Structure formats: structure tokens, C-alpha cells
Image (cartoon, rainbow over all chains, first blue to last red):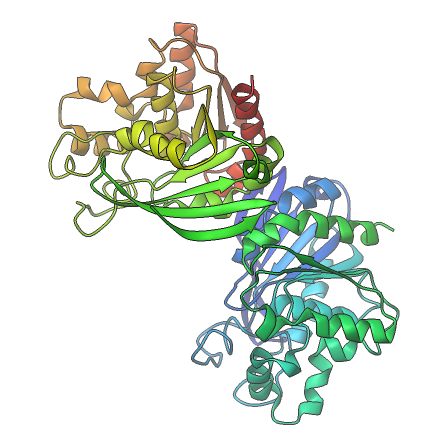
Length: 276
Length: 276
């Protein structure tokens, strides 16, 4: 593991590391923000999963999250969104292949060789973080768009591993929208039953125990009606008796300006659960 | 004037406009953040000048300034850093030509035809802002690196037009460092006496009345010793009896992470003066 960036911000350090991932079979970058408290104590960790086309850079440069992480004493970990490198399969278009791992374990070729982002995020990356950095075992998870999908799916499938979950503009029902249909057809094949293990609207019907769950969605989001459809998740959660908070935010779109506007409230949401 | 971006952030609107500049003889973009208070009242304006290679986008996407502008009720205006377009002269390298206007009025060809950023920032852009947006005549100015130089020079030459000034990592003595030597040789020609009108360390010796002036400088800034040298400015200010606040910030580099860490304090500095 090699540190490739090291920058002071909000009294702490925004670092980027490169390491060899066994789950993904390639070199990967991840970003970690160590707030000032990390110099003297172990801190809980909020994992952030980014959306389509992103790398580990987008969140750390545009969300303005570090000041809130410093305020609350939370470490932020932001991985890349897919396996990388010349040996890794790719596709035309921004919504399949590199930058579009969808946080699944692919079962179909040519994807299955490297696209195992679910295992990477759930197992390998936390194990690395917990071995190498001053963290507690208290974890939370959040993300944006495809990363909001990833955060919801991973938290709902592993409620014992996380204290809280949140999402901005998440894909909540990938089995019912074009982005999910394209990605899951490629990564998982034609058996749509296999897709349900990666669909938050399916998973919320049986997940227990419930975690504190917050979703923010801009009502001017250009992908709202075709790809995101948060009401599908809200209805399934309500029927299942799973308490969630879904906030429709008037005027906001799908951009990082939306995340920058509410990331402080999300970090406060997680800090409450992480320190409870 | 055409609005080309319109995004909700921190309760207000981050807009980008395109207009034809008479000072520069080309089409220019500028960004303006209208905090929520702008819907019902006139507000003071903080002009932000960016550094080498930047456009109007860098500050608005990376500094996290909008939340503080909303807190204090200040409009933010962030112009581009040079004239643009196919008709505009350019040069090899990032530190001359497009993206490197240095906020001067060029007197040498091929630059003089378009590179009149001083007039654009001091006269044309404020006149446009004051004609088209809900602003008062209270102005402040700030910037980073080359833009910190621009902010200091413009405020020191026009103290009656601004209530306060600040800078991050500014070029304070361009006549004494390589960046300034290259740019001023090209834009202003070999007469070094003509350069003094754009050198903050020269100007602070005679500027009056003094404005509230804040400089933040990271001590891990890779350009500190060769290009920035804030002590030259501090010494000249002290000799002239011009009160300034220069803060050396341990560990911080030249990046937007540094600005994101302290932009809240800079906006508070300007808000105090703008509302006094």
C-alpha cells in the first residue's frame, strides 16, 4: 500500500492510497480523510460510494465533507467505483464497465474476472482500513446515485456491519430502471431473480434489524423519473415497516452542489449512530 | 447576457452567465452565487479571482464557499482568468496567455488587443453585476495565487471601490519572482517601472486609506519560496504603516483543500467590512 496524495484540509489530512486488491485483481486507489482527532484516538468510519463515471477524487474535491468530518470526529473513506487497469474489461458508454461497477459481484464474462466491487467494499477494503488506520469497528455507509444504490444494498444486506446508512439521489430499484437493466444484464446475466440481491427495494422488504436510513433527493434531478424513483423504495419500506427518512429537496439537481448542500446533515446523521 | 448554468446550492443558486466583454473583446463566462437572501433584498458582493489555469468553474465547484455566503448574505462573483476564444493570443505553458491574464492591462502585442483583465475586473464586470443583479454598491475582493495578486493590486489601487480584501497564497511581488517576470515582460514590455503598477508590494507603500486585509499562506506550499514570498509584502506593509494580517498555516499546500479549509473565515472577514 502506497500513499500517493497527502494534503492538509480542515485541520486533518486528505490522503489517497494505492494498493493491490485481491477481490478485484488490480491496483486500486482509495481516499481517506483523517480528521485532527485521528492523531490521538481511534475514530469511526463513514464509507462513501460515488456514482457513475467517478473515481476516488470526486467526493474529496467537491463535496466539502472534510470540515464536517473534522467537526464530528469521523474518518471518511472514498473508494473508486470499479476495477481499473488495462487488463480490466470495459464497454462503450459511461454506464457499464470502468467507472460503473454498480457494487455487485459480476458472474458473467468478461466481467466476472475483476468486477467484484461488492466483496471489495464489504470485506476487503474495511479489513485493510481496520488493519492500517486508527479506526474503531463502528462503520457507516453513504453514497450518491449508483453509489447510493451501493450504500443501500450493502447496508440492507449487512445490517450487523453498519450503524447507519444514507444516500443522495440513489438508484433504489435497479431491476426496474434502464441503468440497472443494462448493468445487471451484463454483470449478472438474464436470470432476473439473481438481480434481486442487489436491489434495495427488494432487500428492504426482509432486512433486519433496521438501521437509521436517510435519503435526500432533489426534485429537479434530471434522472429522477427515469432512473431513480425513490418512491418505489419508500413504498416498499412502508409496507415492510422499515422506518426511513426520504426528503425531497426542492430545486436541487443531480450534481455535487446538491451533496455539498446537505453532506453536513448526512455526516451528523451518521455521527449520531456511530457514537451511540 | 445568457445564463448557461443554474444549480441550487445551500438554499440559493449557483449560476454561470456568458456575455460579450467590451474591455476584452471576446465572450466571457462568469459565475455568480445568489444566496437565499437575494430573493428579497440587495446584498453586498465578494469578487473572487482565481489562479493560473483556472476558469470560472474551479472556485464554485471546489472551495465550498456557497454555504458561508448563504450564512452571511453575500453574493459571490467569480470571473474567468483571461480572455478566451480563437481570436485571442495564447502561448505555450500554463503561466502565460489563456488562463494566465494576471489581471493587468497588456500594452504589448500580441496581448494588448484582448488582455485587459484589469479594466474588466475593476470596471466592466462590476458595472454589469450592478446593473443586472440585486446588489448594493458594497464590494470586497479576494483570490488565490495569481488571483490573490489580482485582488491585492486591485484593492490597493482602488481602495474607495472596495470595503475589504483578502488572499490565499498570493503572488505578492510579481516584479521579483519568475511568474511575474515572464508575464509582465510579455504583457507590459521591458520597462520595469511600468510593472510597479501591478505589484502589491510596491503599491502597499503608498495606498490609502488602508482596507481590512487578510492573507492566508500554507507553509507547505510548493510555490512559497520561489513565487509567493509573502514576507516581502509584510515587510513593505509594516514599513508603510499599513496594517495587515498574514497567517502562515502549518501543513497546508497550494491546493483548493487549503481554500476550502479557510474560505469560511475569509467570507466572515469580508462580511464584517461589507456590513459595517
